[in-house]
Length: 308
Image (tube, rainbow, N blue to C red):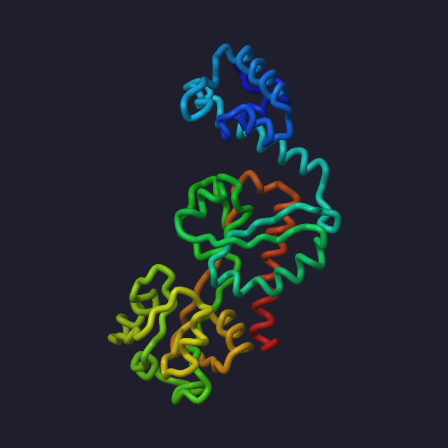
């Protein structure tokens, strides 16, 4: 059967049954009564000439035919939803939607200030949701709709995930006020000779900068590893450790702690990208959200450069 010939009112019941594997839960998921869901299932079975879902100890298990149909139904729902949003337009000022960004910790610290301010001003009735995102899980989160966009340092991505560079941020050195090298220009040799604090969420004992130092015949001693940037101020406060952080994070820390920033002796920066599923390319609401993130990245960089 051609999926295009199916009554559109049956697409969501089928999709809900694939997700919930139970008539009662599927009905609740899309706001139908249980009898209405049972009727929809009967119509689906008649349309496809297959049981589609059979009872098992774990619930309603989809048949091979249902598994074959499922991707087509999901794609049809996505296209219809996108078309409806496009035809309706989008007004952030009246929106009550929730917008979810999966963010690496650095990106959240760097962007949350200007992003939250602009979001509240433009979409006062909507909700901004920031959740952790990193590594291979990003693609899965985007595919399943768990997040609208991902903002992180991204590697290679499959063709159906779109991405563009959002910002480039140079690294700087941070140390406590009164540290012998605080606020002073330093050579690369002096930098390498210090005891270092490394932010390493996965616990790895070296970072990308260590590979650069090797090219200069240098090696630094990492005396302390911490899992988050938020631990850095406390780690530096009563020690002679230094840390190397993206400038935007360093500026945020220096604004609230007795920390001094110093230029890194070499040009070394991190790039952060924004990624989204291609189904959201033409979605007006998602286009607005991506533009808002781009503006926040630009505004945050301007604030850091001017010291605001």
